[in-house]
Image 1: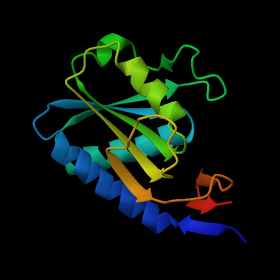
Image 2: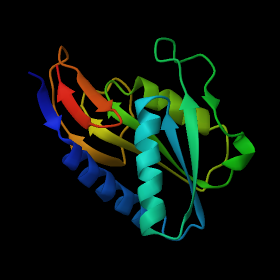
Image 3: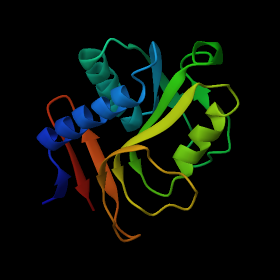
Length: 164
């Protein structure tokens, strides 16, 4: 039995709420880039991009960000060239904010390019940061022990987050 912390319905609700927060923050922009950290962060970014597209007239560009989570100082790779997100508003998205390592290296990558606005979004914030990084938009804030792990499952037929 898994300790479910977010059901599919709750994930959908939190995604919609974050999408509205993103729209409110970037309402003066013509276009935003939603950059998801590879695998689950990118899947969550796709969901946010679709929702922002549904609720607003903002042009949404989706970008996948590849970071080596075992060795984050390696080069960060994006699915679109820097020229396509330069001087635009950008939201960096991940599924879970654990220690902040992945997010801080993602932020560092985008600091080499001039941006109009830069925000971060996560589905779950664990509150165990080792780096001075925060999520501007978060679905759930959860204090856990360092031994516990949060897993987000995005399958075709089910979505949920659980604690192990």
